[in-house]
Length: 110
Image (cartoon, rainbow, N blue to C red):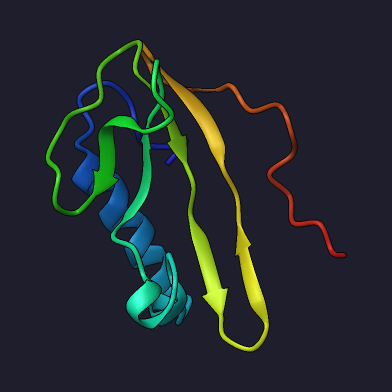
């Protein structure tokens, strides 16, 4: 997301690219949940409310605009093992995305 999303990018494209990445890794069944618990979005806008527009989903066509703030939160659920996910808050800048989240996106083994 960080490399291609900028003002004018459609939220459907963000979701589609994330799903395609999961498919290539053989994790489509585990992407954003598993079975009936699987959800069809990977992020949402932030503002006065915790969940606002835009919604990053294949069903909601909305283009990113400069100044929008959103949470990108891909997750994988592996039945019998657990779940792993990350949430990164981003601001849409004039030429791309700016990270608001200051913690590392690296995987931490527990």
